[in-house]
Image 1: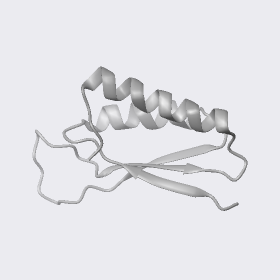
Image 2: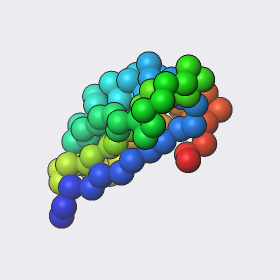
Image 3: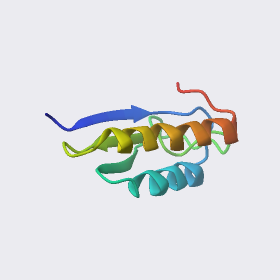
Image 4: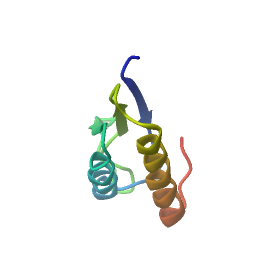
Length: 85
């Protein structure tokens, strides 16, 4: 089984919240996370300074770990009224 990686973007989410989500997810066993670079070089205070979040599942990541990731992402979607983009 290969490592699985996905990228997630939330429109308008601040950098600090992306960092909070990444820190939260990195505590799940078998999960690594990081931030994707911003897609534009032009600074806009009302836009995120990051392009998104990547999540990588290790080969050893259990179903429980994957469910925890989904629960964490659902929490942040509910908290900030977000949709995947």
